[in-house]
Length: 234
Image (cartoon, rainbow, N blue to C red; front, top):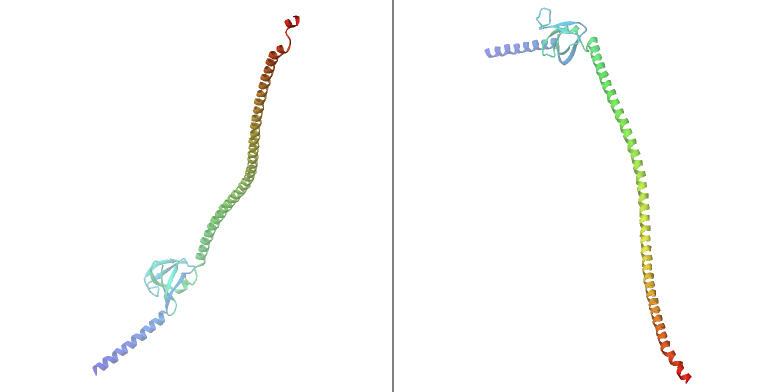
């Protein structure tokens, strides 16, 4: 009997606890880590509870401060939030906004504008550098093209000179060959002339000797053919 009563009281307590927890959960309306911003109010205090009587945990949040929304009260007058520094507390929901304040947006836009101007200036500088490099590369290409044309012209001249040199060398070889042939003919004619001179010398020598012999013969023979004078006078 006592066990039955204890079981009944325990069941009643459990049900009461579940009802209380459900009411608390319904009144708190837990939100999943959403982000909210302080509206266009200069400073908003962050308190430890859902009233002005609770202790201030942060003296004043500046307009535009991003906060992480943890939960909202049942009447939605207060919201439990968390700062980027990890401070948690309650704040009046009327000071929260789904978007940053106009001033914060303006400051953000100004920062973005300044950043874009800086990027634009850097891009212009890079563009000028690229243009200068392009001009330098274009000038270098033009110079290379001119050098190539000059090289091609010089190559053509060298080819022409080489062709002339080859032709002159061929002609020179031909002239050398002709000169050698003429020299051979001259040597042959010289040899033949020497032979003729030698033959003429021999013929002249023989003729001289023959003439001497004839003179000797006449000298010896003619006196014998003529009668002597003493004989005739006798």
